[in-house]
Length: 202
Image (cartoon, rainbow, N blue to C red; front, side, top):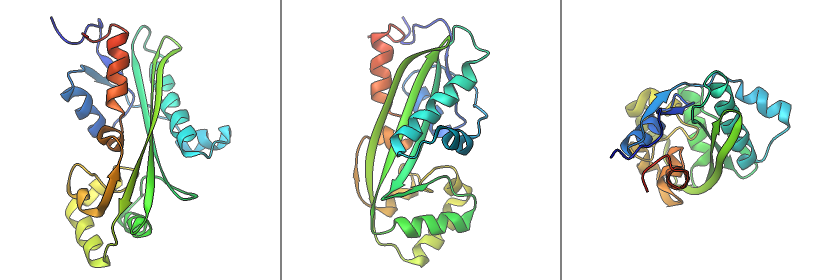
């Protein structure tokens, strides 16, 4: 008997390669249907500023957008926000922005707020928000310049301009929180729900 019991694969409303790899490695069959939404516009219209609420709002928006034309399918939306004190960071637009962002985070502790929303036929089946705290060590400009040269465009692929599963681990002094949450997907709570719902063998 297979682990996955649902009749069709899970639909992931994200173009994140990391999220895809996490779910696939856990034995969850996937179809990728990235949601094309205006994230900043949605946040602005909703008047949402609190990091967890913003991540939750966008995870739902992505799932809704992708599920609109997918009846009877399980659709998963996910989003992550980075809060550093009263400041919020988004994915850097270029290398200079990534450098400035990492420079700002150096020597301090920031939070990653990661949200997921699972939707089917217009109903929210499951939602979850989790927070991790990461302390970036004091970093020289020379290290940052070398680091960004080595990782290239990967710095632009995540809200923090780093990947803790790779060379980005060298940026940190301390990490508090779930590893999968930091990568952008609170996997364990999701798997627990899928088991309880009869979508995965328990």
